[in-house]
Amino acid sequence: MLQFGLRLGDRPRQLITTTPRPVPLLKALMGDAETVLTRMSTLANRDNLAPGFMQALESRYGGTRLGRQELDGELIEDREDGLWKREAIEAVTIRFAGVLRRIVVAVDPPASAGPQSCCGIVVAGLDASGRAVVLADCSVEGASPAGWAQAVVKAYRRFDADRVVAEINQGGDMVAAMLKSIDAGLPVTSVRATRGKFLRAEPVAALYEQGRVAHAGRFPALEDQMCDFGPEGLSSGRSPDRLDALVWALTALMLEGQGEPRVRPV
Image (tube, rainbow, N blue to C red):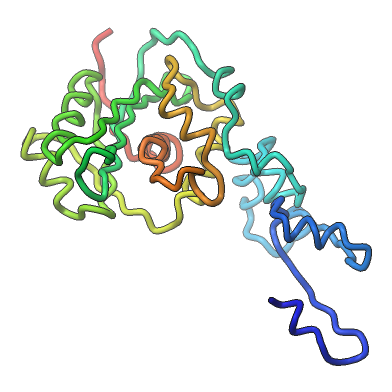
């Protein structure tokens, strides 16, 4: 629509500044012979940034696809295929039998109950080296609130977890209340999403690219959502419930440090 505003004057022009993403409109503009391209990396602006900012960004995103896009200004074509690729997930699948320092159970409650609903429940831990290990996808489909709450508590007890991290955007205080109705002593941390799903998932995808996350087995339903998730969500239009739970679990362990350490018997 902006093109239709360039109708007056001898040489109407427009200036576009953006992170280079391979969307059709941007690629068409970049391929136009009349377009003048100027690229600048975040490094070129370091004199105007807070001390330590660049070091923090390089530590978190250096060497990843997100870092090349956001920090170096590169156009990464394969972003249209989603944040994860199957071969990359397969490469980090391991046989894990070690001791974990922290374990969390993350839950993404469904917006409503019904046969098509799914409650995302993912268990992940932190090993001695600081690497996150995804232990299980315990998600349940078509369950009532009491049903998925029981599944969360079951996963918490099965893995001797330290904490339950529960998104409350859909159910508010009801989510924690439902969980505590099953186990009154359940340690629950409520989290509320203030950004879109894609923005929340990007830093977690970067952890995978840096080799800081492993899977202790194959989780087909979860991996299907991971590999089908792009800027517009899942191609089916459904909520990425399992992926949301994964994002909350790894955010708590690796990006916000909300888990609680405790001594475990070997």
